[in-house]
Length: 628
Image (cartoon, rainbow, N blue to C red):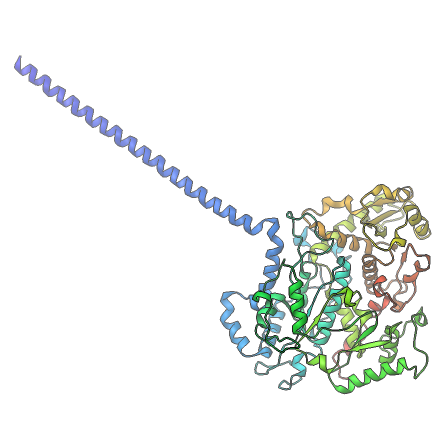
C-alpha cells in the first residue's frame, strides 16, 4: 500500500504543479491581454488628443470670425515693413540701416515681384463666375503700366538736398527723410467714408507722402451680425490697397501701428516742442476708442486747415517757388476778374473745356462758388507729418470728391490722379465677383422674360434711399417714383432696385408695371459673403443697368453714376466725349436730367458726381513723363 500511496502523492503533486503552471499561463496571458488593451487605449487616447489639438488649432485659424483678421495680417506681413518674417529680419535691418532711399529701392524691387493684375478680375477663388466674359463685364478700370512709374515731384527722393533726380530713381547710398500723411476717417455712412478716403489717398500720392491707414474700427451702418462675422474694418477690407501699393513706385501705405513704432521718440508737441509718445505708449489701436489717438496726432503734427466748402486745395506743379507763385497769381487774377467775370458753374453747362487747357481755365471751373485757394506751400511741403482731422463742429470734414477739391496745376498730374482712383481704388475681387454673378442672373431673368427682343438681357435699375436718409424731400412714395421714371423705362421690363427699404410692399406701384427684383432674390448666389458688403453689391449691380434712376444727395447713387461714367468712357457710349451718361434723378424736378449734359462741380460737392471724374481722363498718358 505504501508504494501506491507514494505514487498517488507524486501524481497529486504533479497534477498540482501542472495546475499551477496552467494558472500562471492563464494569468500571464490575461496580463498580456490587459497590457495589449491598455496599449490600444493609450494609442487611441494619444490619437484623440492629437486630433483634438489639431481641431482646436484649425478652428482658431480658420473660424469665420478670424478669416478677415488673418487676411489683414497676411497683408501687413507681405507689405508693411515692420511686419516682416524672422527669416528676413537681418536683411531688412541691413536695408533700414542704409537709410530711407535703400528702403525705397528695396520696396520697389519687392513691388515688382508682388505686382498683380489689377486690370483683370480674378473670380476663380471667389465663387465665380467661371466664364471670364461675365466677370469682364464688371471691369471699368484700365491697366496703364506707365502710370505706375509716376512719382510725385514732392516725393522726398526728388526734394531731398542729398538726392539726385533721374529716370533710374535713387541709389542705396542716398539719404532722404520719408514724410507722412495721417487722417481721421469720416464718421458718416460708408459712401461718405469712401469719398473722404479717396481724397486722402490722392493727396498722399500727389504730395509724395506715405499714407498712414487709421486703425481698424467699426463703421456706421457696417455693424451687421456682431459676433457672427467681421464687422470692424480698415480700408483694405474693401479696396485692393495692397496691390495699389505694390504696383506704384511712388505710393506707400503703412498701418498706424507701424507709423507709431517708427516715430517713437521723434514726434514733438507743436507748441512746447517736447517729445511726445502716444497715450500710455500704445501703438496698436485696433478696435480701441480713437479719441485719444486723434488728439495726440493733432498735437504733434500740423493739421491741414482746409475746408472743401470754402477753398480749393492747390497743388503746385513742383516744389519750385516759381510754380507756387504762378498758382497764387492765377487765383488772384480770377478773383480780381482781371480777364473777365469770375466763372460760374452755369457757364460750363454743356460746354466742357479741354482737359489740357490752361491752369487758369481749369482753376476757374473747379472753384465754382468758392473764392479761396488753400495752397500746398513750402511750409506744408517741409512738414515731416501732416494730419487731416474729421470734426464737423470745427468745419473740418472731407465730405467731398477728390476731383472737386484737389487742383493740380499740371493737367497731366490732374488726369493721373483721376486714373489712379479709377484703376486702383475699386472694390476687392470678392465683392466685384459676387456682383458679377448677380448681374448675370438678372440678365438671364430679362432674357427669359423677352428672349426675342432682349437677347442681351438688358435691365434697368433704381437706387432708392430711404431708411435714415436725412434729406426728407427725396423720400417720396413709390407712385411718385413710377411717375417720374416711366418715360425712360419700358413697361414689363426687369427693374433691379437697390434700396434700404425693408418693406418691399412699398414698391407695389412699381411691381404692377415692371418685373421688380432685389438683392434679396439672389442671396443663394453669394453664400458666405459678409452682409456688410450688401450695399456695395447693390451699387455694382445697379451700375450695369441700361437706364439708372438715383436718389439725389445720396453718395451711394453718386458712386453708381461714377462707375457708369467709367463704363461709358471705356466703351465710348453715346455722349462719352462730354461725359454724358443715361442716368436720372427722381426728384427734385430740376435735378432729373443733370447727368445727361456736362456739368462742372457745384456746391454741395457731395450731392452728386460730376463728369470731370471720368471724362477723357486717359488723355495725355504718353505725356506724363515728359518735362514741361
